[in-house]
Image (cartoon, rainbow, N blue to C red; front, side, top):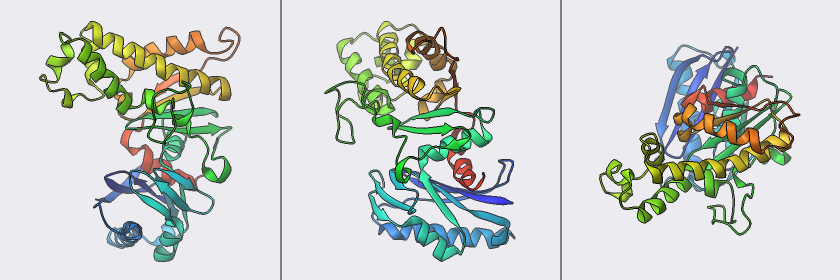
Length: 316
């Protein structure tokens, strides 16, 4: 049996036909054009699925169903995207539209949950029963895997790990609250922290790295200059890792997973990020001398985690 996995992003919708072993047999997708009625995106997706099945000599009976990972607040029980800030979708009945237009079963979950399912079924987490995943991108997404099952919480709205509070009355978050982990450990937060440090140190190597244009600062700026032993960059990275460690310690103490997986753009720093975090995590978590070690990995599936994880919604 094969599966169809759909990864809804802020700028495009990507899909794939996925085998039971996690091989993406065929890819398809389209860019998101701003300003269309929200149902039009899902209608177009359904039509594209129908077209790709026929064009590639498949039958609908070859697929168990269509799994979808979508950013935002997702009611996985009703199959509705209640709210997606980046997409400006509200109360969009994704599952019913797909099922009506394709005649195939459909399931939906938050995009970070989908990435978690992908890593658990096909990626670095496949040999573990209990996992936590954090996606470090524009925001901070979260996914939790407990005893070989994806944890959804009430109506699939649980595991919003990026919106756990790590600082009372702290930095404002895009969600409207203050002190969220996302406000400190996202790429957006790191860029803000980097710019602030650069403004204080006009001699930092980071200025040269961005050709003296502060608007070119990105999530790599501090890390790449820290690797060249720039003092201010090292301080930015160390502080960022301290913020992220608070979240990791909390999730370690709450769930005691066998491993925590880091995804998103910052995970491309790989061992430069995880080695330092592992030491900070070990020293800070409750009872670390007497409790099982929590491993720390970066995503193995990269940009394919969303497609594979969405497909995995149909794999028990």
